[in-house]
Image 1 (tube, helix red, strand yellow):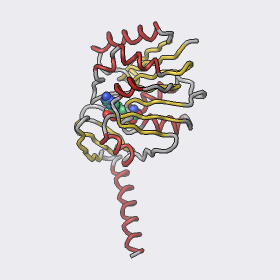
Image 2: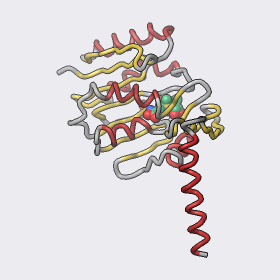
Image 3: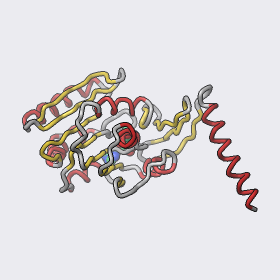
Image 4: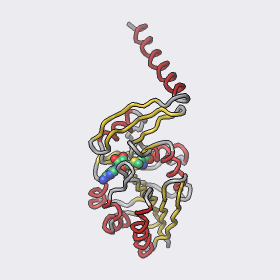
Length: 232
Ligand SMILES: C[S@@+](CC[C@H](N)C(=O)[O-])C[C@H]1O[C@@H](n2cnc3c(N)ncnc32)[C@H](O)[C@@H]1O
């Protein structure tokens, strides 16, 4: 009995190693259906797991690099509470914890229960006293939120689109109301040039509320990032 469970364990470990090695030659994909995000793909590629939709890299891979570039421009030393809107597979959480050694509290919101399961089961994201995961619509969550955060990361996509409400003045007012006095906002903005006007409106709204805004175009050759910091 003991020996057969050991054999099963060794078989699973060897299979995982084989999949990882094979992924350097050929990507290996498992598909999962989600009502909200369509078909999600968990793909082993070059020895690393990624989460993709039909047209977009959602977590790990390029998306993770893009958000890391944004985080490098933010002083996290005073941050006690971070809010992530759009948790996905949780790659920005791993970046914060592993690359920036961030040990304080993170609240992560995602509307899609399938994605939340994938984050926990496929990407070993573990809820604990420092990581709260909430399945909710980010728009409603922000309307009801009363807490203040030192950094709010906004990474809300459905495939390659940012849903229109996340460009609205009222959403951005709710965001600003939830930023602490020396806090920052990191917005993974759209991939589409047609959204430029909407982005400019957000920058104006932030400037009018005492935020210094840096807009970085074509980060990792694709996305625009907005980094907003309260001045004074
Ligand atoms: C690009 S992924 C986020 C990746 C993640 N930040 C990471 O670091 O791995 C975009 C996420 O936004 C979520 N999303 C889209 N609309 C949403 C909404 N209204 N409320 C909450 N989450 C939403 C999607 O379910 C998806 O998981």
